[in-house]
Length: 242
Image 1: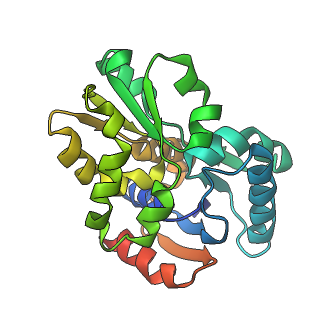
Image 2: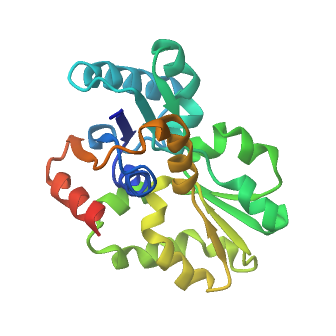
Image 3: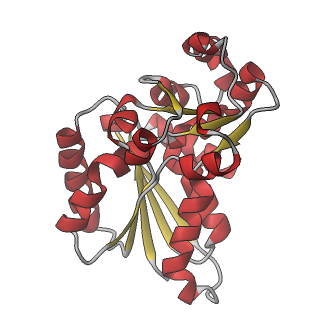
């Protein structure tokens, strides 16, 4: 049974974990929610590399991971190549905004990417295409704070989208793993005709490529760790089970 570490700043990693367990129910999973350093989306590339290297080094001391999933678009575009060099014997899987599937079905100018400022700045795929983007600096943090009462975020999200009143996208790419939690709110604001894309299934299928040789093993194990606010641990477990 392969040891699979997922790392994110919070509940976004839970969304990736859910899909990985569904697609690969034969791994030993540890999700590390780095609430202590939330939010990732407004930190510099250099700071994120420092934080991630330190976290991985510490975790390696008690959880000998075979595969690491950077369950965060921001970490992926700032840290993936760096950590591959630091840990050359580990398989790393990144999470990238699902821009390619979106533009395969819709014109680039009809696609809106919602992501953190750092993801929009550093992600090559986003900047390669003529998609519209909106940086949401605080939404990931707000989702974690209100995971059990997400409806209170509706007015704030609506205010963030106010500049798009004259532009109704045909496709929305959820370019932060946290944003899956508010997809229904976004549908309510933007309308039911909008198609949403996220990265969870793509990450899970990539994991399956590396661990499918053990597919005949039955059962899986899941652990969740939280740095910082330990009150989030019960909340993230609840989110995983629902």
